[in-house]
Structures are given as C-alpha cells and as structure tokens.
Image (tube, rainbow, N blue to C red; front, side):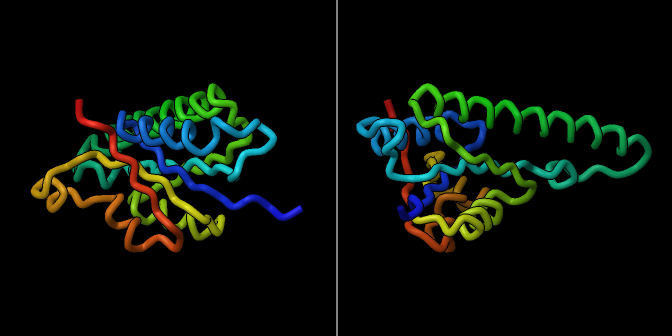
Length: 158
C-alpha cells in the first residue's frame, strides 16, 4: 500500500493557529475513521531564538538570555502539547512533531521539504496592510515559497 500524503500544519501560540488546526482536523479528518485518515500529519513549531528576540549586550546579559531561552522553550513545549492534545481529541493520534529554532518562514518551508509535504496549513493572524508590511506575513511568504499547496485558514471575525 502506498504511503499517505503528508500534511504539515504550522502551529504557534496564537488563537489563530489553534483555530486553523481545529478547522483543518474537522474538515479533513472528522469524517474518516482513525485508520482511514487521508494524510499523515506533521505539526511544526518554529521556536524563536532568544538573541533575536531582543538585542541585549553588556554585563548580566548572559543570565538574562538564559532566562529568556528557558521561557521560550517552555512556551514551545506548551504550544506543542496543546496542539497534540487537540489532535488526540479529534482522534488524530499519529502525529509527528517538529520544533526547530529560527524564523518561522524558513522553519516551515524546511519541514515541508523534509517530509515532501503535499499540503501546508497555516493560520492567518489577520494583520492589516501596515502591520503585515512591518512584521512580515508568514502565511504570505509560505504561499509563495513552500514547495507544495498552501491552505491559509482565517479565523472568522465575530
């Protein structure tokens, strides 16, 4: 039997990300039994690098960066645990998890390439034009650079 195509789902700590994960599981996996899922799932989380978060130098900065790195690792662990819990609750139990340091745009596209993904799912933070220009849009970058189809899931405005 042929291997299932791979779906990479990018997750971060935002509610938009978890909405995209739940929406995807509900629409692609809910109607199939656990043994008949249409994709193998890989969750990817890009962990920020402490030194890139804040430019700190001078006496005492080493201790500050160590504390910041611990916080970033804890945040990544919580994010991945929550995402895995959502998958398990939706009966998607066989999930690979990738947590890599770096710019989310690069990390996500590297994981897509590593697993030869058929589709990438990313959430949209719904930034306006100015915020998107200043912060950059991970979903926009991935839509243009990922070597697979990209589905951007937007959380409805209520």
